[in-house]
Length: 593
Image: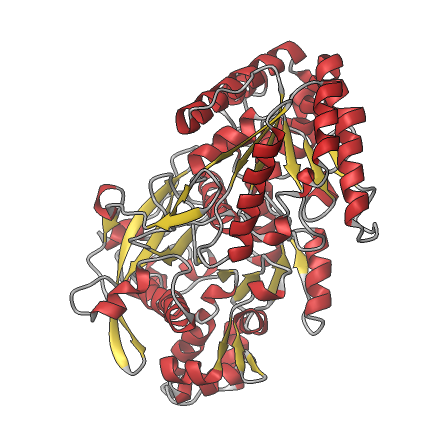
C-alpha cells in the first residue's frame, strides 16, 4: 500500500520504491525531485467537501496541472469529515448552514499508517487517506488527507478534522498543528525522506517549518538544541505563497495559547524562527521567515504584500486555473477540433483566432443552455436564453461588494429598458461567522425583489465546484467588483476566460494583467491607480454596461463573439495552472520542469 505512494521523478515517469528505501537505492535522489505541497484546503472533487472557495480550488488546480506535467509532487491537507457547511437561503436571503456529511471510504483509500503529535501535553494520533489526481497522460499525483477521528483519541481531538475553518482559536491552532507537524510526520512514515521544496500554500501550514527544524536537530543527535544553522538549512527548502492582502486574513494566535497547545520549548523555537512579535504568533510572518522564496499571487498583490511586509522580499507568480477542469464540454470539443494540442499545452489556446465565430457562438449557446437548465432545476425559475446574462459567483464577504451594481436601481432599470433585458445570476457562501457577508447576500435578495423586470436577479444557493463550472462557462459577462487593493488575484474570471466569457471588473488582482479594454473585456474605472471613489466606480460600471457592452451584445453579436474569441486567445492561453506550475518549478522550487 505505502509503496504505491512513492513519488515519480520529474524526468523518468512513474517510479516505485519500497516505503523506507534509502535515496541511494533510487537512480535519482527523491530529495532533489519531490515537492511537498501543504494546503489547509484542496478542491479535489465535487463530492469531497475539503474546500471553501478560491484557495482550495487554486490548490486543486495546482495539483491537477502538476499531474498533467508529470511533476513529482505530493499534496498534504486535512480530511474534514463534516466538510465545509452546506448553505441554505430563505426567501429573504437569510443564510443558515448545515454540516456536509460524506463517506470518505467511497472516494478515498485509507492508509494503514498512523503517526503521533503532541498537543496540549497529550498524544494525538493522526491517520491518513489517499486520493490520486490523474493527469492527461495518466501520471498520478498523491494527495494525503490527514484524519484525527481515530478511536485512540479523545472526542475533542477526534473533532479536529471535522470542519474546515471551524471552531475558535484553540481549535484552529490545533488544526494547523495537525497539518504542519502531523503532515511532516506522515510524509516520513510513508517513506518520503525529504523534498527539494516544501510549499506552504498560505500560512495555515507554517508549523511545518518547526517540524523540519526539530527533525534536523534530531539528525544531529541534539533534539533539545535547535541552532541557527538548523533554521538556515530548513529555510533553503521552504517556499511560501500568500493569498491575501487583507490583514484579517493572516492567522494570529496569542502566545499564551501557543504555549498551552505546543508547550514552552516549541514556543521558544517559534520565537527563534522569527514568527512571534507583540505577544502573538503570526503564521504569515512565520512562513515568510522560514522560507527562501515568498510570492504573491499577482503582480499587484506582490506590490501590496511588499508594502505590508517591508522586511521581506516578495516575488510574483500570478494564479492560473486548470484548463481541462474548467473548460466546458462544448468548448472542449471545439478546441479538440481546431486546437488539438490544447490539453497537452494550454499555450496553444492563443490560436483561438482561427476558430470560426459561428462555431464559437454555438459552443457558448450550448454552455448557456446547460447553465440555465441547472438554475431552473435548483431554483424553479426559468431565465431567458436570449437575454444578456451576467455572472457573479464569489465567496460572500464585504470587500467583494456583490451589491455594488445595485447602488442605483433606477439607473439599472433604465439600462435594461433602453438596451435590452438583463439577467444576473449570483452564487456564493458566507462564512458562518461572517455577519457582513450574510448581510451582503440579504441585500442582493432585496435588490432582486425591488427590480423584478427588466432586470432579473437570481441567487443560487450552495455554490460548489459543479455550479462553478456551469456558471463561468454559461454566462455572457463575468462581473467582479472588489474593493481595491483587497483582491489578491481572483480566479473566477480566468475560468470564464477559458470559455470565452469576457469580464467587467475592477482593475485589481489578476485583471490588472489580463485586461485589454474592449478586447478581453472591460474595466471599471480607468486603472489600478484611480482614486478611491465608489460613486465614480458605480458610474463607470453603469456607463460601460449601458453604452458599450449591452449595445454590442444585442446590436453587434459578431463583434461580441470576437471579444469572446480574443478572451480565449489572450487570457485563456496565459492565466492557466500549467503556466503557473511551470513558474513555480523554475523560480520557487528551482527544479527543471
